[in-house]
Image 1 (cartoon, rainbow, N blue to C red):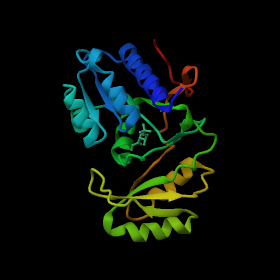
Image 2: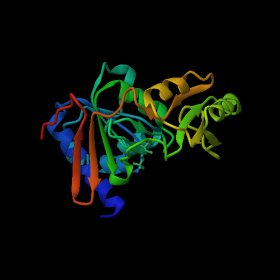
Image 3: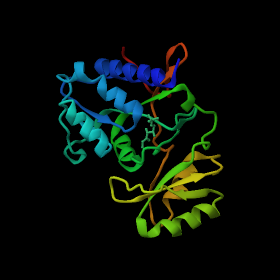
Length: 230
Ligand code: 5RP
């Protein structure tokens, strides 16, 4: 099965999950990326059920608006029950690398404000160990060289993402070759570098449910404590 078809199936499974688990009128958190775009495109039948959505990027906000789904500001909401987003890599402990689309900071904020993080991805995203995908790090523009030096001292090979500015007006360094032995510790260490806004390790707050499009359909993986109503 093609990667696109796997993404499509994972997106459809997430829409089914939302239909079964989100209370009528509740607000949904929506991530960013090609898999999430497919998910948004399957939301039409749920439009009446949704109270609205909080978007993790301008691209997602625009796509939701095009589908007639009302957008809310996270500051107007206590908590979100469900957040649906993709990943660049996800390991067996549900820790992820995210930010391939450059929306990592808003994604992490919404993930933090959500009770259940549903990750949707194609089979190629599930890995034994994180780190093949270069780690995106959002930095304040004037600090990009300074931060790059510190990331290099940690063993990484940072490359400035050419011509890219985040929705927050910042730059992204894509850092290859980091040895990720303890993803939670590395996430915290990188956040300590002055000039870093956020990094794409989602280990402290990982996913709760993984809906993985695979050769023979969708595989569902639950982290300990996560439940699934179908
Ligand atoms: C965007 C992200 C995406 O979730 C990640 O890049 C996966 O994208 P795709 O679904 O296109 O493979 O973190 O910042």
